[in-house]
Amino acid sequence: MDKRFSLIFLIVSGAFFLFIVGLTGFRIEQSRRHNAELARERVPALVAKTVSLRDSTGGFGTPEFRKNMKDVFDAEPRLLLLSLHSPSDGMLYVVARTKSYLKVPAEPTPDWRGTPAYDMSRGYDVLASEPIPGSIPGLTLDALFVVMGREDLYPVVRDDLYLFLAFLLVCGVIILIFMSVQMDDSGSDHRRVRPAAAAHAPSAPHAAPPREEAASQEAEPRRPQTGPASESPEPKVQGLTSPRTGLVWAEFLEPRLRAELERASSSDQDISVARIRIDEPYVDQRLPLVTAEIARLLKQSFPLHDLIFEAGNDGYTVILPDSEVDAALRVLEEFRKKTGATAIEGMTRSVSIGVSSRGGRLIQENVLREEADIAVAKASREGGNQVIGFRVDASRFRTSLTGSLS
Image (cartoon, rainbow, N blue to C red):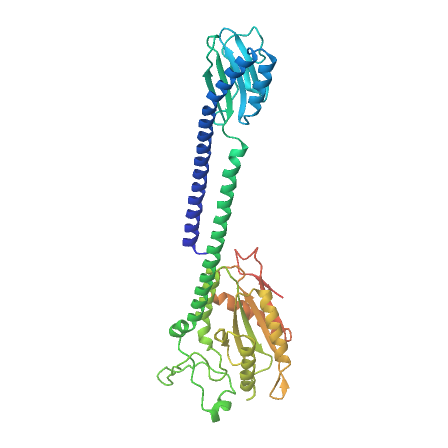
């Protein structure tokens, strides 16, 4: 994946995380303040209810007062503790959800005097006090409310989860779109490799001889010229493919393979190279016709014709992009069977094939090609008509180029 896209994605994800954390803290604080204000607004009503019950039941110690105050306490779901106390008379009445909220005194008695203390959690509970008018000096009502409970946190967490899922969905769609665009760009670069390779490749070999002289001239292998260049100048052939086979000239293999290796490395993909050799010596005038017919079978078997190259008078090279060695072996085995089942010039022909793949390595094009040459040489040496793959020993590749053939 593109590094710039990855960096942007990390920045956006970090910003979204900070946004979620900030939004969660803001909503929790808003809910806590709102509940605290509501709790303080309820205290005057509780004082009025207490005074009314005191006057109607005859005092704080009567059973009717205690029963009615318990009903008032139960009607307030956020109320954790309710107490009535004065410095002179001590604790007159106390009711709580659990005894743990009353810290001092731990057990109220008629003889206890002082100011009570409560065990409360900062941020979650709030204590509101209000004096009660009457004959008892310093009489105070204390009410302990919960301002941040599970019912307050649930909506915040639920909305955060919805936002997080929506963010994941948007990220997934964006990643899919980016990968699709990247694949399209890779395909465009792949299609542009051929003219680039043609522009920078070395000059093509000699032009094909006239039709009536082709058989006699191709009966013998090509020999390198030893005389001065001025005695037999070599003309340059315009075009990418050989008129003899319709395949790409062998001279274009190195730059094209280099470009394909760079593309495979940048996309972390595999790539294989196959060397194909005809299993018969180049001794008569029929082999050039066999070479052209097998070239036709190659173009039928491999749709990317600009990745099929000549290799001497009796061989071919095929680049298989996005293909590891085992997959390439299966495809090439099918081609070997197809060749053996096709009658060429009145008889069946066989080929030897060697294949090597990048296998996650950072190697040069000549190394990959040489490995395929080693494999096809072994196939020919062991009787031909077979496909052999060059397999690299990954544990020893760091120190030396070693491999095995299978």
